[in-house]
Amino acid sequence: MRQWRFYTAKELRPQGWLRRQLEIQAAGLGGNLHKVWPDIRDSAWIGGKREGWERVPYWLDGFIPLAYLLQDEEMISTVKKYVDAILAAQQPDGWICPCPENKRAKYDTWAVQLISKTLTVYYECSGDARVPEALYRVLKNYCDLLKSGAIKLFRWGESRWFETFIALDFLYETYKEDWIKDLARILKQQGYDYRRAVDAWKKPSHVWRRKTHIVNIAMMLKSEAVSCELLGEPYTDRAEALREILDRYNGTAFDGFTGDEVLSGLDPTRGTELCAVVEQMYSYEHLFAYTGDRKWAERLERIAFNALPATLSEDMWTHQYVQMVNQIACRRTMLMAPFSTNGPEAHLFGLEPNFGCCTANFSQGWPKFALSAFMHRDDTILSAVMLPCELRDGGVSIRVETDYPFRNAARYIVDADRAFPFEIRIPSFAENVKVNGAPAPAENVRFSIAPGHTEIEIAFEASPAFIARPNGLSAVRAGSLLFSVPIEYDKKPREYVRFGVERKYPYCDYQLLPKTPWNYAFADSALTVCRPGAGETPFSRSAPPVTVTAQLQKINWGLKFPYRSVCRKTPKSKTPLGPPETVTLIPYGCAKLRMTEMPCLFMFKPRLSEMGNENEE
Image (cartoon, rainbow, N blue to C red; front, top):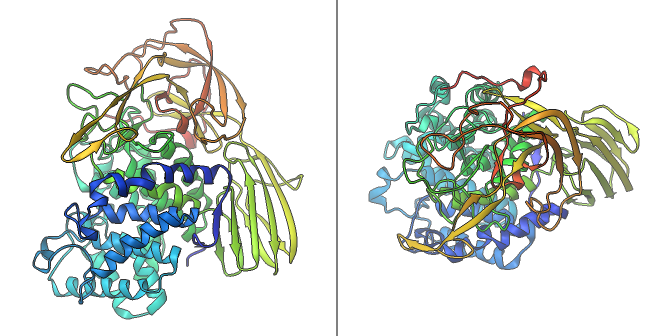
């Protein structure tokens, strides 16, 4: 049984650094894509001639909660314009995608699954009374077509069948009709079972396959959690078993996986696709809500605070298709690309590097993360992720004043017209936890809130420490934050038009060319943390919200043949080339060029849980 339920954008108000991050997104590409990108501006979903498949639903999936969280009337008006056009074009039999009836059999119905999820998100944000009936008709038609054999799942629809359950679960709670369970069973029967793919995950093939496609896999992790109740199946925590294999053979220091676009092993110069970052976050949000197990919330934090900001420019007008843990340059390669199946521009910052799926999809990351701040079960309220925000639940207001994860403290200000149980999730890595000044264990703290005014102070420590990585490398982590050596760079813009899509400032392509050293190793175990806190740009390179000072030494690391801008997986030599230097590490998400996994020139004994698998290609 589901442990927790999400609140909606009607009940949550982001504050502090979180609101600022959402405002930056709204002022950047995520909030303006419909003005500058033909695939959204002129989409077939609203009667135009451009792409009529996944891009508008992907974009709306993030734009909708962003608009309602910020209560931005212009953005909300844009949302309604698109939704009105989509609903107006729905066919009498319920079909909703921009595809004529005689071409449905060859239309990949991943778009049906995705638009159903997006309309569910819209309903939760807006309460638009038209949506439940529209969704009913969409999915009843989908069920009838699949049952009759008029269509079947193939390609992306077959690989992502479980995404339909976001809408199906909502629909069953609303209507309680048996055909909804029939559709659930059909989708699973025709969908791909990723347990069959496990052997292919253990050795990177560098061949494009859907069963090793990182975005499919990131989505899949939540599949059991979102589908088991409707299917009448027991929950077995399958995601943990599959994730353990993924991490052992393809894991990264930020708790994600390499995949450029397919799973790519343990080399820290392999890429991780941005779509996979936001989809892994979404999976972890649902896994935590279903299970209540804090391991999923902690993994969510590590992706959100590290991988998501790392692959976006500070103004959020540009993004990468793939990021690299050890990324010494973002430069177009003249020979073959340094990735498994992506092209030579995939790691540039731009409007549409490599493919446009991430351009459309990345905007869901921050808004849906904000929607995970609070959850509820019956009359119990949970602070699931310690984010600066305000919850308004009827006569209850809970305001969280915090700079977490940059500072490990929070003040909860509660005003309530009723009594209710209240829980605050404390991360397992927390040290010296104090609740209202008194020592407490590193576990959820529970309160019985009485009517009236209550204030709660939470504080803990998260010391910086080394974690072992595969290939004899190490990284530095403090709490949920990963730290890197920042590399200063020159930013080289390129404006041009390709296939009718214009790239111009501020959403042109940018190469980042390094101009400071990167060939380092850790020289000793001393680490000193400083926490100035977040500024106007929370993940700022020039004013990072937290830093770690370490002793490093230059070594002969070397470049990966035949590239001028990709470092080797491991250094040529660990012999120091000079004396130790005091270097300031900054959060991984602040550093667009960075070295993160490096060798230690001293001995330390990592915890067993930190050991990676070195059996790489």
